[in-house]
Length: 129
Length: 444
Image (cartoon, rainbow over all chains, first blue to last red; front, side, top):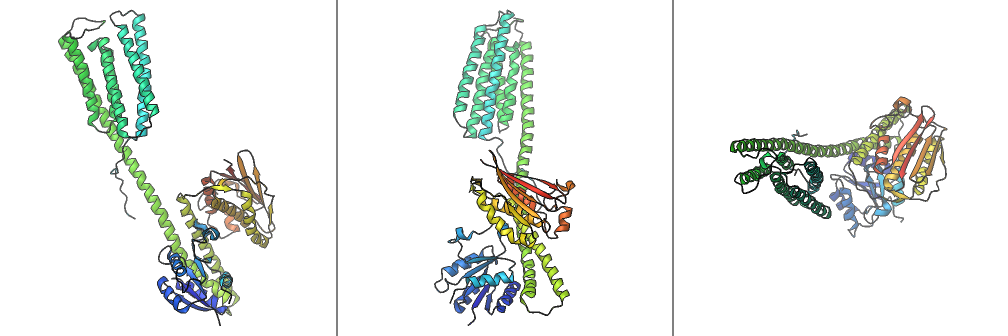
C-alpha cells in the first residue's frame, strides 16, 4: 500500500508542484489550503507524514498547527516537515538541536523546494513500517 | 504613506537632572573664578591704598564665598542627581546666596557708586538659561532690583554707612537716575534672555520631535521592505517550483530548445529569489537585534563552513586550502553572526574564482586581535571600484560579467555584521589576480 502524505499550504501552485513530485514516487497525496480544515482531514485520513507551510495567513500559523497536532492523541505521532521561506538569511534561523522542545516539527525544508530534496527528506522521515 | 507633519507637540523637558547637575557644577566653578577675581581686587585696593574701604569685611565675603562653594561642591559630588526639581532648587539657592553676598559686597564698595552692581546681570542670564518657566527669571530680576534699592535706600537714610572713594555728598536725583538705569538694564536683559531661550527651546523641541518622527518612519520603511520582500517571494517561489517539476520530475518529451528556455527561466527566478533573500536579510540587519555574545572559538567553526563549500569548490576544480587553524583561544562574539560572516566571505571567494583557482583560509592572532584572512586567485576588484564594494547594491563591473546572479548586497551585509561585532574588515585586490579579505576582531 502506498504511503499517504498530507500537504497543508495555502499556495495551490506549490501544492501542485509537490503533489506531482511526490506522485512520481508513488505516494498518495492529500491536501488542504487552510490549517483548521487540514487538522480535520488529518484526523480522518491519518496520513503517514505531513508537509506543513510555516507561514499561511499569519507569520506563524504553521507553528500553531504543529502544536495542535502534537497535543492531539490521535495524530501526535505523525512526522511533520515544515517548509519555510524564512531561512538562514532572515536572521530567523531555527537551531534544531537547541529548539527541539520548542519546535514540534521533525525537519525544515527551505523554499523553493528542490524536488530531489523533497523526496529524500520525505523518505528519511517516514516511519518505518 | 501618510504625510508627515513635524510638530513640536511632543514635550521634552529641556533639561534632565544630569544636565542640570552639570550646570550646577558649572556655577560652582564660576564661583571659584569670581572669588579669586575678588581677592585680586581687594589686594589692588590694599596696594593702591584706598583706605575708605573695609578690607576685612571684603575678605570675609571672599571667605564666606569659598566656604559656601566648598560645601556646595561636596554635596553635589556626593549625591547623584535624581530629580529635576531638586537641581532647580540648587540653582535657585546658589543665585539667592550669591545675591545676598553680592549686596553686602556692593554695600562695602560704595553702594550705588559700586561697580559691582553690574554683577546682578550675570544671574539674570543664568536664570533665563536654566529655568523652564518664563516668569522665573523675572522673579530673579525683581530680587536683584529690590536688593539694590533697599541697600541704596538704607544708605540714603543713614541706616547703613556709605563707603565711597568718590563724592560723599548724596544727591537724590543722581540716585534715582542711577537706579532707573539699573532697573531698565536688568529688566531689558531679562526680557531678551527669556525671549532668546524660548526660541532656542522651541527649536530644540522641534528637532527632538523630528528626530523621533524620522526614526519611526525609518522603522516603518524597514517593516514595509520586509513585508514586500516576503510577498514578492511567494509567487516567484511558486514559479520556480513549477519549473523544477517540469524539468526534474515530469517525464516529458520536450525539445532541447524548450528545456533550454526553461533552464533560463529557472536561473532567472533563482536570481530573483537571491535578491529577495538579501533584501529581507538587509532589512533585518537594520534593526538592532538583541543578541547574546558568547565565547566563540573560531577554529571550531571554520572547518564546518569549509566542508560545506567543498562540493561547490570541487565542482569548479578550486582548491580550498585551510592553513591549519589551531588557536583554541575564544573570544566574545555572537556565534550566529560570526558563522554568517565566514560563510559569506568563503562563498564569495569561491564564487568569484575561475575554474582551477585557489582559495586560502588563514587565521592569525596577536596580542589584541584575532585575524581571518581569506585569499583567492579570483577575478579581483578593479582599482577604481575598490572604494565602492561595501556600498549597498554595488557590484563591480567584472563581477557582473563573471556571475550574472548577484545582488550587490553581500559585501555591505558582511561589513555591517563585522562592525556589529566590533570588528574591522579590509581587503587588498588586484584585478585579474585575486583578492585577500582580512577580518579582525578584538580579543577583549
